[in-house]
Image 1: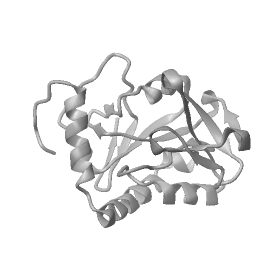
Image 2: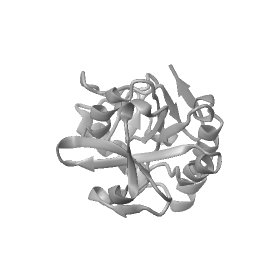
Image 3: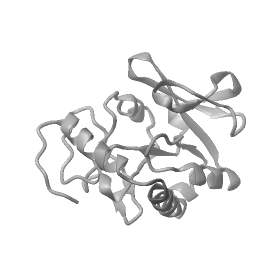
Length: 192
């Protein structure tokens, strides 16, 4: 972790995204595999029945393998569907192929072939992040989708999947920013 002073979230975001973009495809694959293996062993996911996960894009931690393993274990998986104004909902696709590319190039469930999920029914949430710190504060892309959605998920454990190089000394936070219960990297699991 590199100690560095930032004036705002935008500077933090830019710094970490540049570091992440420098990763090679094989490096992303290898580290993502390690992250998925750590996630799969978490008791919080082992006991969860309904899990909100994500479809990775660009250079995010690729949890596709984890999603497949969780489905094979009989877990129900739902994924974010975004709308204007930073509004997000969760949908459970009827099949693993019921996705379409939406804004920002992110694959989202096709709502006509998916079931809406009540946030209060979700047991665990696996989410991407741009950066994190050891106090489990998460920096996202800045649209606030998760920060608006997470408070609705009263019983869900919140788990960020990230590469170690995404860790910063201290994330600049606002009052509405939601901290994680765990952050899982290829090297370590951070817990409260």
